[in-house]
Length: 480
Image 1 (cartoon, rainbow, N blue to C red):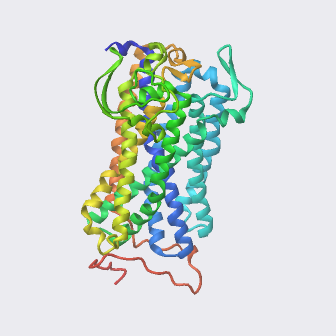
Image 2 (image 1 turned 120 degrees about the vertical axis):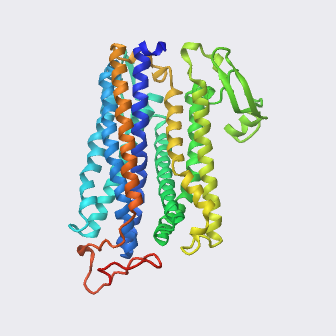
Image 3 (image 1 turned 90 degrees about the vertical axis):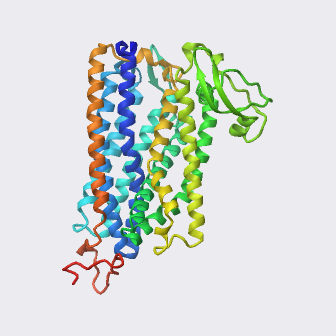
């Protein structure tokens, strides 16, 4: 329990806790906002009530996630001033301004139009409301952009020099367009979208398994499946490109991801480690299951390596990651989930082509729907695992190759950090349970298919097509 008296370790634990918890919420809001743009766009075009009811139902889950995301994000950013003051002083001229852009450009844009999106249905014309929804989605994803710009710069610093321990910006745009930026932004964008698609698909599957509003949720299920056909393979491809960048710019992280201790020269073959038990103490893998000549195929799609791979032993203990097992398995969890979701998408497409996903038959596809229900939380696990690889694999550096994490922590008493860490753990546990409770209430209650179309959306002489209702459902007194 020596770590309880280590201020640096406790500050890292606190930041990890707040970051992991915060990440759960914007992952869904950024992706679900795009889904809301799709369904509301279909409503504006067709005026079919079911699209309107989809927009109203899913926006409830959106705003719940948005609120918790804001509440959990603020304490995380405050830690740069409390627990990591030397870091903020060293890189604040660039890193601080990027976080400021995220708040002033992205968050304010999203928050500014959110009120219209939630409460403006009967107050503004449909096209104005649709514009507000688009701006909310744009703001949410712009936030992702700026956060990934900041984090990518930590991975591959560019655009200036460190002078007397402080980063001096020479070219602001070069710093923004650092080598990791483009792939990182795209990888996270598709990660949030893929996670949201499978969450929406999983919730829709739950309703159809319960045979509630089957026709209604068959529609949302097929919308997300159509989007997943493009998103899942693109995400895998971008993930591979990101791994290639890690190989080039952060070879110590790649060695940790593969638990590779020895150097591998160019022109040779190398086995790929499928399962292993890495040991820092012995600088070896105590147990290992390998795929013969697999590493070349994983990295270059061929058996022989065209470039050498440095093993962990080529760095001193001080200059390489220590949590090898965590990085190794987090990478495999992330990758495995990506391929599993792609496989589920392919099976679903086959059933769609066979005509098994029509409203009258989809509820009978129990194993397929259970697969989607099981897949709903997997995107979250993949995203969290990816960030573990990204940030833990960067250690022992806060800014890769420039600033060490141990030197960037504030000089605070360990007891005070432990107290705040405990407080965050308790508070976030309460927030998590509370959020699940309110989300479950929204889901159990289900969509209100009796919700009238806003009067501002009605055009003289145009009849609105009635929404589908469940068979054998008794009409309400008002309908009678």
